Length: 222
Image (cartoon, rainbow, N blue to C red; front, side, top):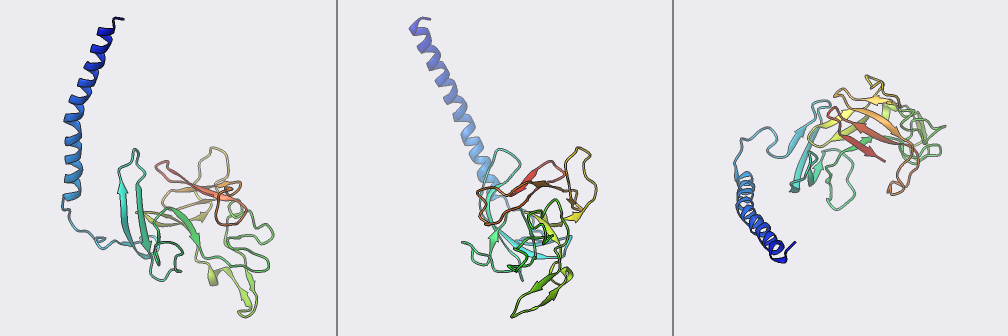
């Protein structure tokens, strides 16, 4: 190939890119500016308040940083405050990170259980033996026997923008093999992960969860 032809092709490509970029970048930038300056109608959550339709819970969500991503999952840093909840531990004071998570009220450190346990005789199988936690025998100074309905109100899957979905034993699950011990009324299904990740900061062992929502999005809680 003659050197002059190759150089001419390179210059043509360079000029073509410059022309396209010169037309595209300002247009996309203008769209971005217009999107953030557009005034929308106010709805019931203009103070960041959210009502959980399944549980009636009230929470407040504020988004501090949001960036455009390359798929449907949001790229953002947001925080959530739920009145009456236990104080969060982190950089947001009484607010917690607004990210998908599983939560419930379980027994603390006792002689026969450590946190999330559903079977005291087999404490690592919190998913494959998914159920209500067992009765606990509390040590002094608050000695006593407490049944699950006295301290546990259910186990929930929280999804930003959708609120809490209670994990229920059984339900409609795919006939594709594998175990799906819990589902939600909203159509999410939970299956088991054999172990928590080695990078988990919980300091615990045992099974994790994988929740699949009706749109096919998978969330790993390990």
